[in-house]
Length: 374
Image (cartoon, rainbow, N blue to C red; front, side, top):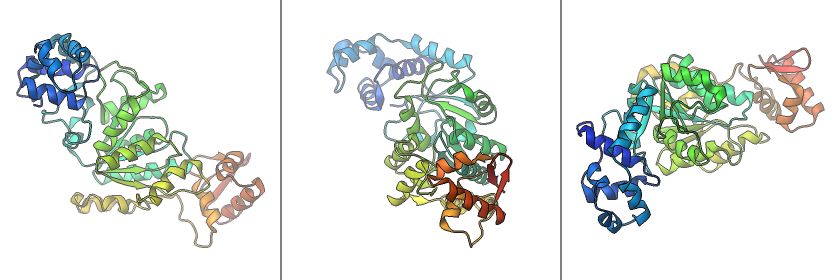
């Protein structure tokens, strides 16, 4: 049975204590609660009974017997110290979409606006080592989604995750940052300002207890919550083996839709997204592609359909190579050497194309051979 808001304090504390037993998992937790009827009944069950249950070893039974409601009370106190709410699966605020995913979280710790959990959401993920094109597209997708009333979910990492969160808040919308560590731990440290901003204006969410630092396996577990909270996951840029592709995989495992932003075939950070499209993901070409997945948003969502994904429309006479090169540039100037590296083309060829783009009014050149989109 699931814990609920109507349970006694003792049962809630017992459930919290059980949820933190190493290796508990939804399967073992379900077995325990089915056999023992209540969380308190599980942690106070005889050792012999626990050992007789399927999937429970003597070592695991020993760990269960070693815990008590006091462990749950200490966990609740730790959450209170960082201003967090504790959500159990039976609580009204627990996100409905996470109740039915494979390997559902036993408990969630939340800091911020819990009402965001009840809104339709889109996950936007991408590479940490992104291009200016990826950042620009991410900003526009997140802004369009936020203006349509969708909540933007991402993983609070460096790179495109941070861009998505910031753009959603800048557009006056809501965002949920899913952490791979406990509340009170800011990782990466460079995202301190974003952490504080999302905690105040959006929602920070994690299944890890307060103060817990990230571990090797923390982020794949976080990724299943990112996709689990959203009806659609949009992958903007992802190199081969990128964590964003793990999130796309968990979305598919959960029966959710995956969209991918196409990129230049010469770009290492578009290898993953282009392969996703090849393998059946829906291409993301304009905000309307996403908003079609949320018909219930109504006419107001139309406000976002006109948000452009590029700073300047590309002229029809540009070659495919010139279009790909323009896609590598964004609002922030990039040095010629970096453009050449990202394009993986000879420097003379890239410079000639940039000059043509400049004449076409698509690109601006700044002193020192720095280039940006107009």
